[in-house]
Image (cartoon, rainbow, N blue to C red; front, side):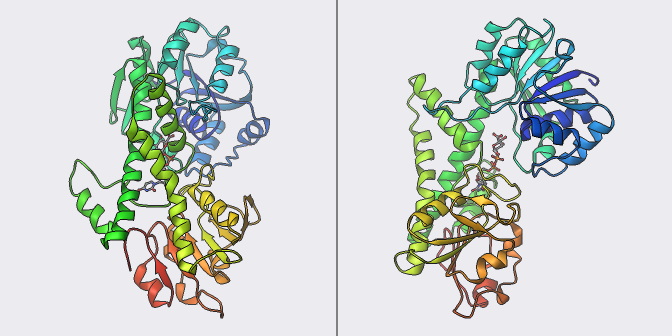
Length: 425
Ligand code: UGA
């Protein structure tokens, strides 16, 4: 199906990707946001997010007249066929998702929409929200969670592995499915609570897998095993698979930390004991402390006045997003103990205000005068550095590689002491 009239609320990476990709599929899309600067710049075709392919899609959509950006309510709202809600649902004070942005949009639009318009909830919302909204408004409501990874959002939208639509109104759910015009993805049509739960269950499962592998990496260091060999052996079992098995300084970003807390809050409210989730979150909280311990060990005690260069500041490679970044948690711990911090990230501009850090413009600048270098995200650029030319006259820094991204032999041949993750060198 093409040519549907769609309004998308929220121009973050989910809403903007959804709007631009639907415009490319031939729909007529208006995307609304409350941030005037964002609306103005997007209307000029300028995308501030680091999402490969998104700027081109936005420019094409604007050029073909299939995509526009508005501040607040679109004038044509009463005529649209679908409204997508893609506004943030951050963690509230009790750990549950804060729905105030979703509620604010709904309260403004519900009187304006036609009875045939389908309201689609793309924001990650607690189980039961779609049913609750359905009771409040006259038109059909569908849960259609997103599975977009930051830094791969356009690719994930264009080649989805699955499209989940859940509603008590199955016809409305199928109409939403038809918008995607994709017959390669597996479709799941369900009730709305199940669709909402697929999203949380998936992100929490990924978080659990990572906490498991991070704990295994710690064990490997203690028993002199090698996490790379262990995960390679595990991944040959098709039931386990090879993805999400790379150890690191902990999982972060705008999704996994928020969704694990939210599912735990949902389970607690439903009086379901879910210690696995508790342990998943607790294991992750320990990760920055583990990195801290390694740095302390590397300098033989206190980090006070030690010059530390951090390589990688965002929550993962391939994004400019610093939200809930494990790298910043590590930086906070180091700064609290008096370390002198310099940081570099390919996606964080030099001179940016990033907590206790002085952000420099090249990896070389971060390494050159450091006593310790801590690698915190897996940018390929770090692996490709010419290590033979780094380090100042006072001696070469010790390197703590929390992602095992550096080429061990090259770095050691260049004269560095390297402390890896999940293996003794
Ligand atoms: C995550 C999910 O992967 C998406 O499927 C989901 O749509 C999205 O949340 C969302 O809810 O919107 P994202 O937050 O972009 O995507 O990040 P991931 O790629 O999942 O990485 C999460 C964290 O795990 C990062 O800190 C990353 O460095 C870490 N990670 C990932 C590892 O430490 N090791 C790995 O092997 C993989």
